[in-house]
Length: 237
Image (tube, rainbow, N blue to C red; front, side):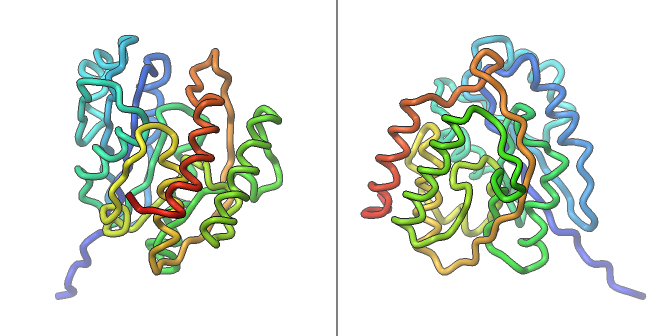
């Protein structure tokens, strides 16, 4: 009798904060994901939502989620991811925001290089497909921050600030995340650069939203990113 081969597992970690208009639709779309020979678990961290999102998750969202965690105080994206990463059981872990700026149907493309054994970490780049979208100022800021990050880390990525970052589980779990908000992106990139890993990028689509529509990153996060690029070049702490 042929011995059955155990499936690999992908853990999707979704930080959520005040997304009542979109959260159920995002959960539904993530649950439509199918990857051959890969089981999928969805872990959601509600970062102390105050707009009714938490009630929606408790009443309507549970059937889509494998594990849901609730913060008693808002900690920011980095804080929510730190909580979520600890609870994952997958071989590969990827971040998914609770909106549609990034299309969950493209997750298989981002995790494929890792499952295929061709990479340890994969970033989904919004700038590789040549069709940049969003405010010009945001695009410019992202590209400047990426170039500065590359200068400090010795990497050659095109989109350091991307949400779609996928990791071998043991790699991301070996990193002590300090940044609470969006400083997570330059922090994790700097700390990855100090490890003997293979990091690749794949092109992804991007559908930016406005602040009115719920976008939360702001100019102060940009200044924090500059600080983090320098800080984590010098220290891992």
